[in-house]
Length: 252
Image 1 (cartoon, rainbow, N blue to C red):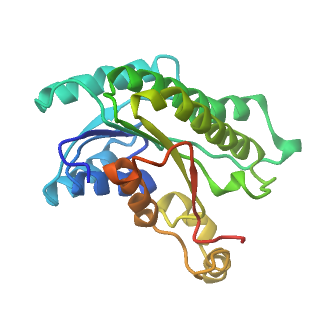
Image 2 (image 1 turned 135 degrees about the vertical axis):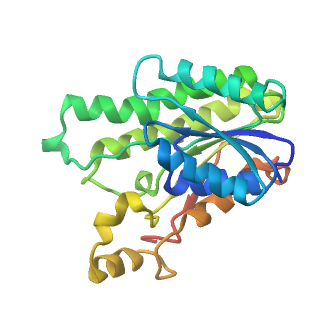
């Protein structure tokens, strides 16, 4: 449980991030819901949390732009102060990310820079600032991807960026272990969200994606959120430096 804790979930206005934010709030955390530009979607997340009796506030920042991390924490600190919980951050969930389909012959410098700016660079500096606010015993949870364990040449740069997240998780876990801070990552497979509706636009396409899992269904945001909630809890205190597959056994 995360009762009495403060959590920051990046990329929490929709999809998996929204599911994570809702679950942490359900467990009793005050949740900072980060979004880049879709304010109405972020407000929907806040309303869902509040309607369920939870507490949350929104923080806007473009993490792919210079100064984005600084803006994020300026607004986070202000939001925490407004809620009277005192300074600090107990749980950081690095979920914000962008994708882009491109094989090696299609990769451009612009695509490479944008994906790594959000998926990797901003994650490092978001975590750096979080650790300055995090007490001993805190939690850092990175959202990686199942593409780091299977070949996915259709999205080469995206796969590379998530591989970097896995390596970062391992190294940071050793760095902060003396503070009893755990650092883990979760690797979702295909999750049914509005962001990937185009990939399942036909019944046949959806069935093919579902068939990748040994359970024969598409993943749901709650499937990932429940794992994150465990990693954010005291029950996960003896787990660190791990990447947990959350793909429903896809492509075993």
